[in-house]
Image (tube, rainbow, N blue to C red; front, side, top):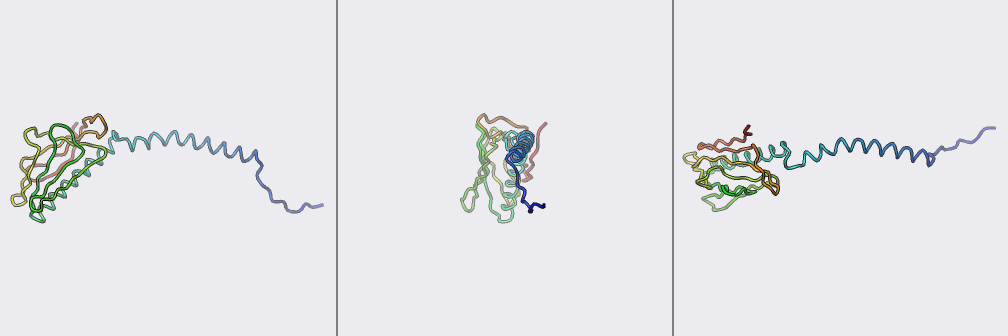
Length: 162
């Protein structure tokens, strides 16, 4: 006697065992992946700070290029006492200001005599040249080894001091 074709289904025990195996595999992979993900979003992680510093340097270089293209001079303001989470450019011809801010890092000028630098497009000069020290943007504002320097000729360089 032949039995009609039965459609076989999973039993409750098979489902419980499969779910248990999947949860063990997930827990093992989570324990390896979580520290890496946490490290990549941590503001103290070197790659995050390096990316923010390089983005800031590109913004500063683009401001210099826009000044050369339009002939519009600007003043760059960087606080030299307490680290601030923004840099500010004030365009002379239009009177408009432009801010660059970061969620993770703060900036402080290492030029103790002045916190304002003026870029003159006609002479292609920044007076005075400036070095900006980068701090971590969390509550303690810890100092990093990263610096952004802008030479008197408008060359922007982001570097890590060893």
